[in-house]
Structure formats: structure tokens, C-alpha cells
Length: 127
Image (cartoon, rainbow, N blue to C red):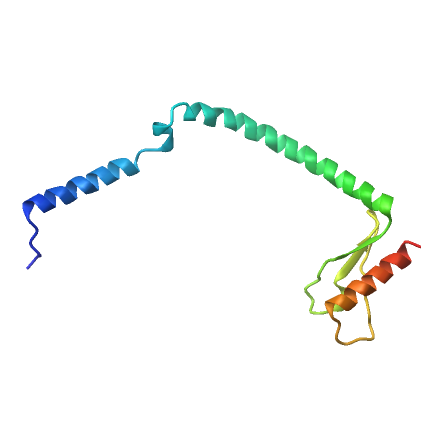
């Protein structure tokens, strides 16, 4: 036996569901005048942004190389994910790369020890 709903309640539920369905199908562009023109102009904008981004990446890479060359060697944290913290620093002068094996005689190395050893190694490379 199905639960009994009065006819007025059934009609109200059907109209509410229909109103919800119609409202859900309305898009933002239907409500906002001029929105489609905004979207059309944005397509051109995104294309020019892609070109600018590619050009910006090119110049950023050049600037990074020039910064490295001007300042000498830099050592930076670059984990190798090989469960050996001794080689988790990489050094570069913008052209050449070196991955030193820091504090080889210590079986357990903490991050602050590696930071200090990398700073010392960087100072040696820049002499």
C-alpha cells in the first residue's frame, strides 16, 4: 500500500519540482545583460595572455641564468627522494650543476647540519 498524499500536496510538489528545474536551467548569461559579449572579448584576451606567458617564461629563464652568473654559485635544497639526505642539495652557477655529498662520515644527518654544510660548500665554490 502506497502512502497517501492529498491531491493539493501532490500538485504543490509537482509545481515546486518544475519551478526548480526551470530555475536550474537558467544560466548566468541569461540573467546578466552583455555577459556573452564579455565572454567573446575574453577569448581574444586569453590568447594574448598565452603569448605573453610564453614570452615571460623565456625572459624569466634568461634572467635567472644572468642572476646566477652575476652572483656566482648558489646551493639550494633539492631533495633526491632516494632516502639519503647527504645529497639533497644542488649547487649551480647558472650553467654548471654540482650535487655535493655533504657530511659523508655522519650516518644520521639533520636538516640544520645540511644547511650549514651547503652554505660552507657554496662559500668554497665562490672563492
